[in-house]
Image (cartoon, rainbow, N blue to C red; front, side, top):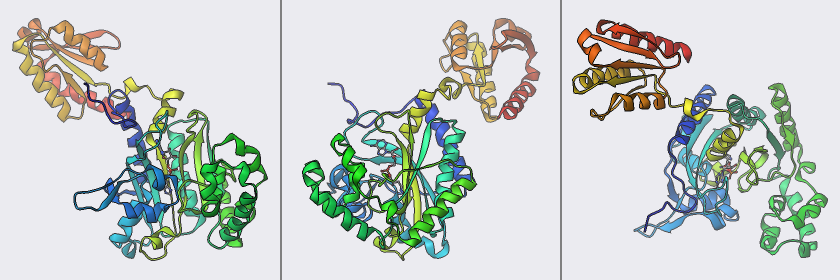
Length: 428
Ligand code: HAM
């Protein structure tokens, strides 16, 4: 029997991998431009971290974690998201003592035992930022602006920033009480799977996908209309700042987010090109988590997006030509055993100089087959060393795009390669 990868967990390789690298490089560069530095936390954490950080009463912790006991009987879980681990690391290493404002980013795999479908996997990659240490609306705005810029740079179209405020420990309890009472009174209309949440987490009703709830949801009170003065002012500050930066958004009072740690700002970017799993990414403010995980009370805000979904949009919108992303700059083609050594040395030299150079590692390969490969590798230039050239101590330099060629003496190879390097740098 052929072995297969685990359901919902994918191999990623060429040519998609080149697109992944292209996107990852953009992500890292933009994060760096905003002053965020990378944090890598382990894939495995103690189960307790997610129970306390993300919340016992969330789908993620209740139903979706890969949890097991290790050989010493400790309960461990594969991380379902990145925020709890980042906070754990900050508290564990006391990072806030020296850096009252922390700007961190991550990029890596997360694991959730969900039903796999297009855009939803059991191992998926998230890119995300966490800005810890301030409650200022400008920090919320920055986290949104970073990702707005990323999506602009990738030339995505049709995505929407949806913004909401879900209140805080001052305004939420009163609202929650009202909502719970209303939902209890209409329990008969609500799918049974939601009944336990009526008491614990009634706002999640807005996230419930059941068609039956569409009408009921429209009648329910919204937290956005019950915000306390501080939350209201904060929410207005976020909106003003986004307008200042020219970042378009819509207010969507139905955004509640599936993790328990949020307060005030909650937001999502979604795309019309993602189908049912329309969230490009989501985030919000989590002012209580650091204290909950044993640190000093510290406000924070963050966001994470799904890399597979970003790649999917790029593919649908056909923004990037994958075959352009891994093109060789130059190929070397040899005639026989006598010319292979020279070509190997030149290719090595070209690579040292920073060119992507292609040469066959099969010294028996025919010139015809090598030329075909050079074409496939996408090389603009090809150095061809045939029998005639060996005798004349020259090499043919062929421009594959114009199909023109010239003879070069061996002594001019260095400077020709240097010219190609300059051309390449000029093109960046
Ligand atoms: P989340 O909304 O659970 O938030 O996930 C963020 C994004 O990860 C989603 O919008 C989606 O693009 C992607 N994603 C989630 N689950 C899957 C899946 N099964 N397959 C493919 N992609 C998926 C968080 O994880 C929070 N930690 C975000 C955050 C950071 N909040 C504050 N800081």
